[in-house]
Length: 165
Image 1 (tube, rainbow, N blue to C red):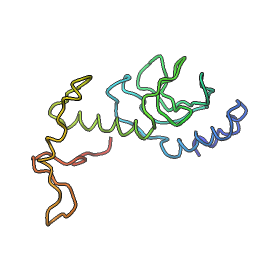
Image 2: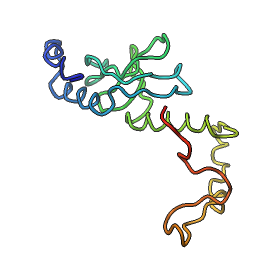
Image 3: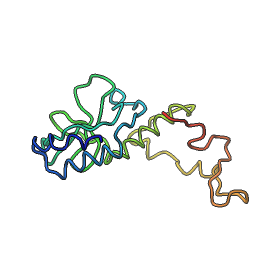
Image 4: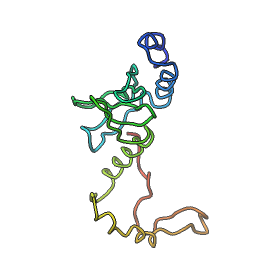
């Protein structure tokens, strides 16, 4: 039953029904998902489980996204437009969507498990990267697998050997 079982009690606290619809949709889609530790924000939320919406300090309503992994002076929240972020006395959006946050955490977790080296590049150094240089090592299909990408550099394809978190 999830978040829907608390709808009447939550309506008494003043959020519009449309906001409660958002909470219930979040719970149906993401509720119970256990995330791998994020590389920042003290590991991020552990489990998605929404709570009662609150009026955001600026505009609209936000709601708690789930349990934190550590005691921190902020909460992981879902913002008025569905963005994922930190709620304190002000709103700090971290990602434009919950799905985007989940993908970024999954990618960071996967990279940390499989990469031989991870280098963080910032500022002007980003412009100096030659991102097209690996294109020569990734070919487009073969007669055995038309239209599929194949690796020719001996690295595992994304997802190979990647089990449940």
